[in-house]
Length: 367
Ligand code: ASP
Image (cartoon, rainbow, N blue to C red):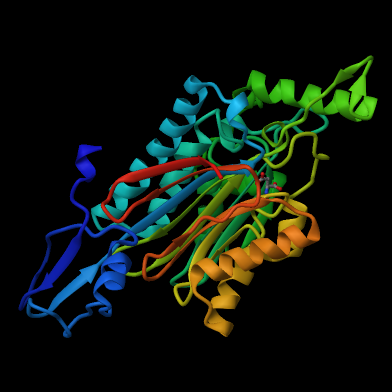
């Protein structure tokens, strides 16, 4: 990742022009501040350079949380997951580095994960109980509090981009099924003619496994069906901070294996699986959707920061603890305006990645 060696963005305000000199990644400023005990350097109050303003960017992605055990993961598979997360971060980070918006970055990162069959979104979406694929997605812009969401899509390759289109052009926040797809078509998004694109052997076998386990009550003829979270669900998401201090969140999912047709989880529900507010943070969640909706996870993280003044990490962890108390498992990614990040999980793993204070990509899978 040699192209990411520079990671400080310092915008020097000269009489009539700005020069972006060094890129400063998520957390770098926070880390530097922690070490020096200094405050953020803002326009007009600089240390050693007149009118110097430090602008940092940040990006965190996830590819779903669940029971991910090392013993079941082959080195090859692990490499593939890691590569997928890195590709997503590259797509998002390139945009942030050149001054693009957090919304563009989060959408771009999620599109890469939607196109990757390893993750339960877009191409790799799980199957419903009737063998179809139904996808949900959402985006939120922390600057304007605009949001867009789609649910139960069947013929859209990149649901996250339709969610964005709903936000920007529909006058609505949430659209589902045929209506959402008709809106997509009207706006130039090509619909797939059938669902073949979404077929993956792994997801199909997971459906058969879950169905067999359901029929047999967990075991049949001495055969035990071990259903892992990998078989059951997954989601992808990204949260980003751009050079203008704007936050954004994006989430996309195929939902849960064997879900009833028409079931919608937390991912497209604004305030549950997805939320962004420049005053607080941007959040994308993954886990048992039914619990994440009831715990209003993403907005709760923001609310704890806004109303209680809680730091990001503490807020994120305490909301996840609330989910656990209800009986749900999963994780979330979050970023605040200072570039602090949180990636709590209460499962044995979560595919996740972030840009570290040195601008390096860090990918983690296990707890
Ligand atoms: N939260 C997603 C849903 O319930 C699934 C997941 O993140 O694993 O649809």
